[in-house]
Image (cartoon, rainbow over all chains, first blue to last red):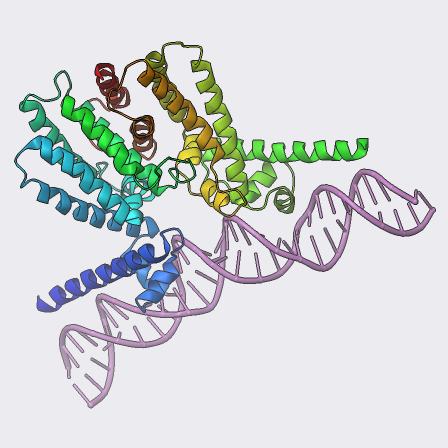
Length: 205
Length: 205
DNA sequence: TTACAAAAATGAACAGTGTTCAAAAAAAAT
DNA sequence: ATTTTTTTTGAACACTGTTCATTTTTGTAA
């Protein structure tokens, strides 16, 4: 059994090595500019080997997208040391924006690129587990806020989706270069100015 | 002079023909799946001709992105028959979402794809005129609201950006398939449920 | 150690992409 | 009718993701 075990471990290790190399190149030169040949070169294996361990490029992208959600999930989990749900919700947005800006390529992969979703569609399961889980943490926090008497007249899901959209939209516009060139009075702080406008609003609700 | 004039007109016509063919194919089979050869075939010209009239693929995408903004701009202009700025702002979001959902590929091109912005970067002008103009209509409406006593304690630009982000975020998540697979209680209406949550909020401000 | 079988890694080859540019065809000017 | 200018062409180039027969490496048993 020990040989088969080791082989299984080695397979996992090489899979991880490929993903590590891919992530490195993605961060260095962008996802679109990274080719399978680049990845193979980076880890000193041949192109063919990459295709032994991954079905296609979307497979790699989907795996990396999942890794991104683990990272974001960890950031979110830390927030649950905060008891007050309103305070947690406020911080959650900050953490989300910070994550998006500091990991633009990964964020793009997680929430913008079609590839991971296309891989999902062509696979057996139809559910976006990473999305469900992470959005669940937002919903949970919003629900606690409502239970404490905030957000009267709103229901959990609509409000959570609205908040997600709001923060995602800001990150999206920034990452996809739509905030540049629009001539904001203070372009460097517009993201946090926008977020502060949102904070002012939910505090009144 | 008349020969040169006719030639100039013919050049414009062929340019428009290429864009028309490109747009048709984009809507039919998606932007990523459309090649320059496809476009050339569609209008019965050779690949080379396309490159006489457009610098590269980004050039075509940027031109089509501008056309999209003309369409959206027209939709927005119609809203200015509404006197009450609050009512106009409410309808503006609806029109925006409707446009995004009914013209997904065009919306993607206008607000999501990197291509049009990359073309802008490599051109002489650094300003995103289409974005400035369209966002200007939002800012103008928000400003009128503020002048009428709404949104106390908020400044035009931050709030306008927040609203844009909110609506854009919803459209974005929908178009890039992030609302599917997240197991919403009512997936078909989540976009408008989210928008209604936003309406409830701004009415109170 | 050697012989064989199973597993893993390879890279040339394929069909496709955006892009270029010398040559050909068409139009205009003489 | 001839020359010049403009417009159009499509083969060719360097690149992409992907495949798969072949080679290399590894594990097992005599």
